[in-house]
Length: 137
Length: 137
Length: 137
Image (cartoon, rainbow over all chains, first blue to last red; front, side, top):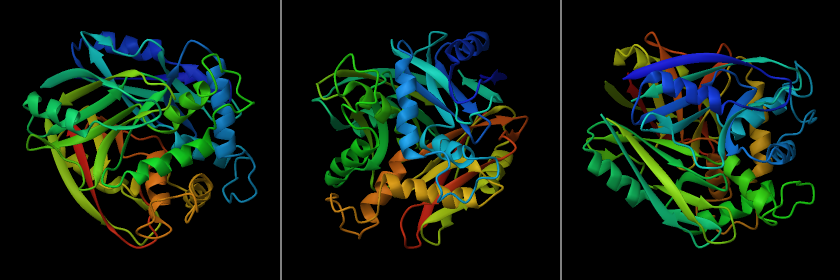
């Protein structure tokens, strides 16, 4: 059994948006018992992560780590048509995830106690981001 | 056809644990012919990788790379409630994988010659880590 | 319904190879309507990414980012049997993806406007790389 839904998330610029509830709702509507829910983001300057959902400072510190890995306005970058956060956003996407497969158990998303699913906007300006969830059950 | 199993791995603190055999055993018990086996770790300070299984120095060198990317005790980190390896462990998890989809061919895990599947413990203390394998066949 | 195919890509040494067309062709042959196509690379010194396909400077800049994260010939690396690009290639693979799950919608690969699927060769010498696509529909 396959169930697919897409939804959009409005971001407020760089930072994470908790989409755990939206993904869990798609799983619920799928009617799957046991299975797999694969989340996919249809963009190259926003990405997906599963991380600690309880303490928001975790996601703030993750920005620090990615800023070290791919700094805005790095003068070595050739791709800067959309500004200093253009290439760094692509790089940060590649260093995290475009898709994540999540287990579904007895009809529910089976995450660990502290896990949440997040869309990570890497551009500094707000964007609308499309996300698909494909449930196989 | 869906087959799901979870198992626990006891880690000895930071480092990798080869779970290829455990994942392959789940695939074997699933009865799947061709398909997909998705491995998922239910934690935010441990992660999954597929890497070279023959020479253990590879995984030691990988620690060096991740220590450069997210150092223990980085004074810029706000999240340090569980100690200097708390935030670095979350960051290292996000830079690697929470889930990996592996091909199943003729009833067997179809990895490349040198590939192994590893749980990567990022905390310095030993932990018990839960892993799920979802086989679709 | 499961459909599996493998194919080989000849790389010209370090750099990205667009495999979007090959993956889309497997999806087309699978006959799947809605579903999931999981791409997997059977190697530990080459990896997969989804990134901007329009401007090739993006992928050149991504090399800069990964070279910062894992430099060739880093004297701290113990694993160098195959030369200065041996360990850096393993590290760059682990920091990107070994597998990526892509949505299939109405029989087609459902990527975002700017997204392409790329094999990323991390060794400096040309290699033949095996890739599997597993379609669940």
